[in-house]
Image (cartoon, rainbow over all chains, first blue to last red):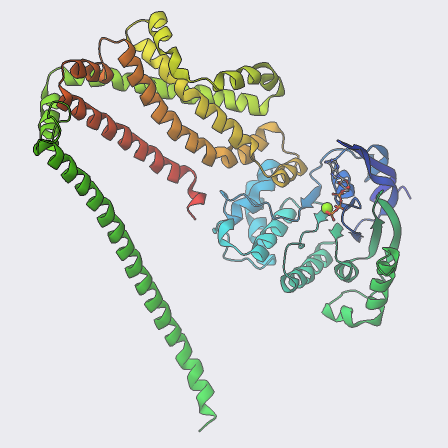
Length: 254
Length: 284
Ligand SMILES: Nc1ncnc2c1ncn2[C@@H]1O[C@H](COP(=O)(O)OP(=O)(O)OP(=O)(O)O)[C@@H](O)[C@H]1O
Ligand SMILES: [Mg+2]
């Protein structure tokens, strides 16, 4: 248990609001192994973003313990990377300058970062777009830049909060396939928030199913679909079975 | 034979496409040119119309020339005023006052704006007072400042500073606060501290609103100086306007107003040019 990369025990989060205290997370416990692809699914307001923020060290937990790589974890760290639902690109920086931002803030080697930036832009299929400004890109392209920026400082754990939620179905699926390819190549640990059950099943090793009011971890579903996965995985009968199981856990069918 | 047709199409299509694009670019350029020309003609036409009405009313004797000088009188008065030996020393006095007032107002607005936005202690200490002082019209201070700082330049500079400080302060504060919380979250996740968040996110993000403040700051600095010179001065454009008005040299007053407007406008355009350079990404 202690050799898991991330070990969260009895984590709770209470927000003080105008209408009184609000329990966003209620006694959530889990382990995450190095290199795992984990998805958090659940309806709106069940505390997915809150849990991800706590994992990123951006939000204080009200109770419980959180251990990352053997140490107590409660503040941002350079070996974590965060990607949000909106691309949050800075319009005054070119695509390349946006991807270089983490390296600049973390004072990483300039030459190495320049090379890495080119590699990453290549990897997300934006070769030749380095000198464009974000306003000149489509939503899908911007999210690709955000993906490249996420990987720029080579974080060990990727925390992704509905990163493709604002994209259309087609672009989203393309991005999913791309993300899987990158994950398989780099062996990073990914924690991925989504509303989309199919997306979670397609991507993950395990799925944390959460329910709201208060935010609880209803259960953890192992995804035993073979890897490497392609779009073909969605035709697997096991795929629909897993989607159905999760639907039932979320109480969608009654 | 039929089998050849698709192949021909493939060969033909890039050329057609190129032609289409070229035609599109050409019509688009012509349309733009035409639009610019029409806009210029409209503006010039309106200007000429106003001049004609003005000339007709004055030269035609409908308004007394002493009350409103004709365009031609005003034109000659400009030559007279600009070649007079009192002109350069007086304009120099006003110019210095405006530039000092603008520079100090702008700098103090930015410094205090950044201070209040970035440091809670500074905000708690001075923000309530600045909000209270922001409401009343600053121009009421003009007579008091003349009493305090005398008839010379310092009192005019002080009025210009007080007038131009507030828009700069408020726009700096607003600009620094108007930030996407997700961007702040991203910076925090990258372990960026206060200074790096300011340098890479808050400041560039605030620049568009701050530049709008700079423009306001400029017009108000000019206003402050001229009003200050009306209230009490021994030199300057405002002083000259006041004196000439008293001597019923309205043509001279008109000439000075036009010169002052042109000067203010030129600097304003310069600021706008700088703005387009500084916040280039808004033009993309
Ligand atoms: N800063 C905050 N202050 C007060 N309440 C908050 C705050 N952030 C989140 N909450 C509350 O905590 C609960 C969980 O919010 P959270 O954003 O984690 O949900 P989520 O699962 O990410 O939802 P969604 O799928 O809509 O993004 C919600 O009821 C929300 O109103
Ligand atoms: Mg959320």
